[in-house]
Amino acid sequence: MIIYNVTTKVEHSIAAAWLAWIKEEHIPDLIHTGCFTHAVILHLLEADDNEGATYAVQYHAESKALYDRYIEHYAEGMRKKATNKWGDKFIAFHTVMQAVN
Image 1: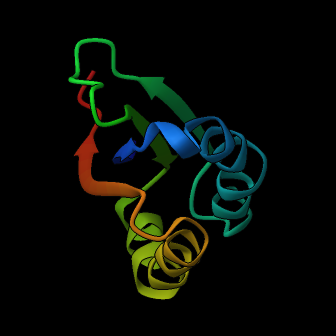
Image 2: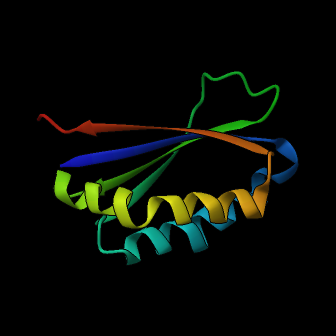
Image 3: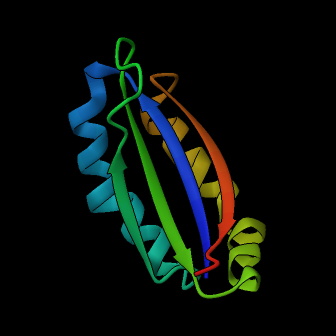
């Protein structure tokens, strides 16, 4: 299992709308690519929230090949859609992990 983790700090002014968008549009779009089986949204509790709320969204892929397919064919477009919608009111960074249970 590959976990594509996107951690995002979202300005307070858009936090509620951004969270609704993640749940209702962005995650369904990523799942629709066929590269991920599901996603989990986490709110970081011990993060500095002075400048905004911090969330981690973990997208689960069954293989590295599926993750690679997402990066090659879909990632740029999905990131561009987020930037077009929210501008500079968020900052995100990405990590890739492998489950080792």
